[in-house]
Every structure is written in structure tokens, then in C-alpha cells.
Length: 158
Image 1 (cartoon, rainbow, N blue to C red):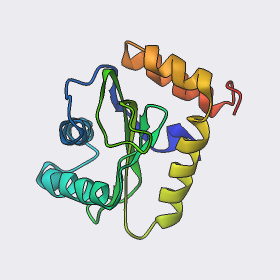
Image 2 (image 1 turned 180 degrees about the horizontal axis):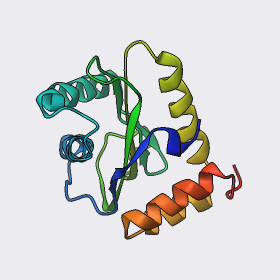
Image 3 (image 1 turned 60 degrees about the vertical axis):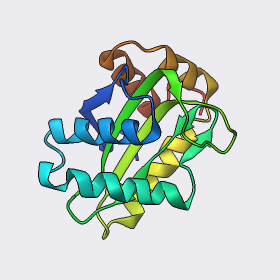
């Protein structure tokens, strides 16, 4: 699975305004609503589902990366958003460090393999130090999208 299979191009944020975990989650869910990929009436339920998942254990996986995710009945297909925080956000990460790169995934309950394949793709690509470095330096959504496209075509070392 590639980023282009699930990342909504209109839900890429180059400079998050939020500075808390819940604020980041809300801002990213809002970006998916604004992109027309989530129903506004489902927004609060999706935020709560992601926050509930965070209670099980932080999705801040270390190295400045978080992958908040959930399954939700209101989505028909896997949708994703990407955001960069230049100041960093405390995400209760496993390594105790701030998070700068956030990849959000929301999938339907009946498509668990898509959810797992997307998580695997994100984690594999984010092991590439140069990919992460360039993403953290991106200042526009277009730059982020170009990097995601390059990752999809194996232009990084992973």
C-alpha cells in the first residue's frame, strides 16, 4: 500500500496550530472533514474514538513520529491525514520525545487488512532518516505531498 492510496491530499497540514495531543487530533480530523472525507456529524465520535485508542497506549512511536488511528463505522474506505508540527507536541511518546510528524488513519471496521497495511507502510517509510528529515523541514503542503509521492516510488532508502 502506498501513501497515495489513503492520504487525502486536501488533508495535509504543513504547520499545525495545535500544541496538545488532543488539539492535534481535533485539527487533523477537522482537515478530513474539510476535505469532504468525514461527515461533520461524525467528527466528535471519531475524535473520541482516537482519544480512546490513545488511552490504550500512545501512538507516539518514537523518533518524533505519531500515528493516531482508529476504526469507525462512518467511513467506507481508509482515509488518512498528514501533519507537521515545527514546534513539536507532547504525545506521551514511547521515547519521551516530542512529536513532529503525525500520520492519522481512520478505517472501516470491516477492512482490517487495509488498516494494517497502511500502518505497516507508514512505519516502514518513517524508519528512513532522510525521509523524516525532509518531512520535518517541509513548509508547504505541496512539499509534503512531493515527499510522499517520492516515498511511494521508492526514491528513499526504505
